[in-house]
Amino acid sequence: YALLSTCAGTFNTVFPLFLFTGTADGGFGFDSSQVGLLLGLGVQLQLFWQPLVFPWLTRKLGFRSCCRLGFLLWGLAVFASPFVSGLQSLPSLLWPTLVTICIIVRAATATSFSSLAVMISFSAPRSLRGRVNGLAQTAAAAIRVVSPIAIGALWGWSLQNGLPWPLDYHFPFHIIGCLALAAAALSFRLPASIEKPAD
Image (cartoon, rainbow, N blue to C red):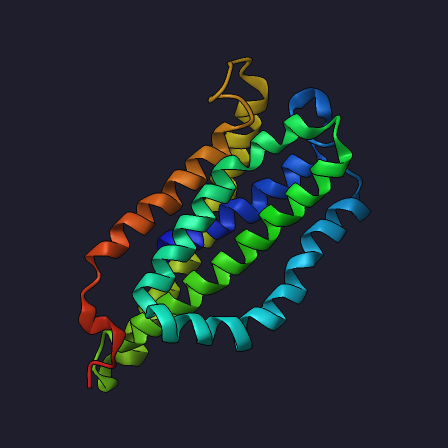
């Protein structure tokens, strides 16, 4: 849960910075209305995703597989997102690609967070669920304080270091994407028993 909070917090920090950054530095040079439009698209998706798609997915795949799929899609979309700046000269492809990335990230985040929340609750007996959920939320909150500061510093360094790929503006996205892929790999260690309440 804390690892997902790290991924979500860092991406939510660096992606708008990437959109605002000038084209000479690998960004898009978007203004606030363009960034707001792009980031706002995910809100409508979640209103549809959570009550309709997520329950259907969990019935078909189970919570562990949904969590894994969310991490996998999330990691791949985030890892690939800086490459979209190569589409600057093709606006007919640029916007649909950015919208697709935003949709994948929002859907995958909702799927992973929801699956993890259920599995955390299922992991403990009823008498300990409050403590276990509190511990998970505390760990996530601590990460939410530190991770935006760290990724902001890494973003600044990647723009100023003069190094080629992968240590240029791609680097923060590759780090975040690899964290999500590592979380997908870790999800294979979750026992089948976590699909049902402990008592």
